[in-house]
Image (tube, rainbow, N blue to C red; front, top):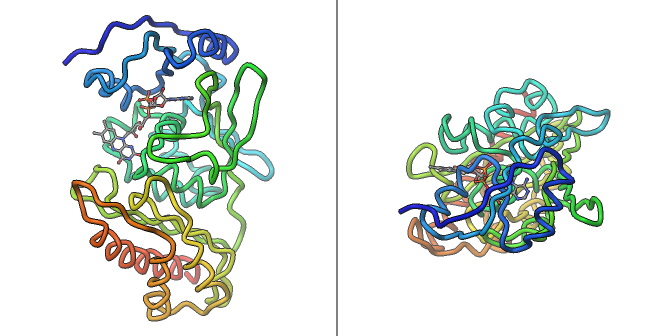
Length: 288
Ligand SMILES: Cc1cc2nc3c(=O)[nH]c(=O)nc-3n(C[C@H](O)[C@H](O)[C@H](O)COP(=O)(O)OP(=O)(O)OC[C@H]3O[C@@H](n4cnc5c(N)ncnc54)[C@H](O)[C@@H]3O)c2cc1C
């Protein structure tokens, strides 16, 4: 199938892009890497009257390392983030997650902001953003606003973005000394979206865990913090046996969904198993 007819605009600045989004409202769609939007147009799942192509807006591209945080521009390609030494140094969780996104060809075009704005419940970047307590920067006709990752993702393919707003970037606090990260996902084939995934970040001292942030993705309609599991493990000397027992707390954290790929019951089992593995990895990273 071919896409329905649409007009096309290629603004050079954020202000021009916002003016177009304000003028056309729900009839406009932002075009970033096009890796999700173009198939959606061709399948006629989306039929905007105008595409606002943001690829010429250089202010949206690249990483900036500041004293306390790293700013990732919305147009930064997945491949750039994957190969960035700043990301491995300051955001090791994100560095672990990037190779799991699709395939190299898609990662050369797909963008950080596109993945966040799409908000697929099984996507890696949204989960890491919640685990790392990131802040989303949204620009609209009335200026900029900042939204915590936890509040940005509001359901499957649904975010806090309004139709006249552009996601300009995401700010991550730099990982501090003593913190470790671990990541894992289960997929049918390499490069597929996750059936379930786990992103974990926390402080480890003398084999004890604290300030843990564990996020489950692929199981619900958005990335979910495993708060019961986090508090089960807080301050504990987490042996593999202790982690395995604590993972039952996940039943109170996620209500896994049924879909074509797995039943909710299968997902519940996979989530527990994967979380045990990822947290054991976290302990290994923390003591190595
Ligand atoms: C075969 C295949 C496998 C894939 N596997 C995975 C996977 O395993 N994990 C994963 O996370 N992703 C996967 N993807 C998706 C890929 O990561 C895309 O890059 C990503 O979903 C969208 O990024 P994009 O830049 O291509 O956005 P686009 O397709 O251009 O846009 C996606 C949506 O976001 C909106 N948008 C984009 N940028 C902005 C912005 N700055 N502000 C406001 N709205 C914006 C668009 O309007 C559109 O609604 C896969 C894609 C394919 C084709």
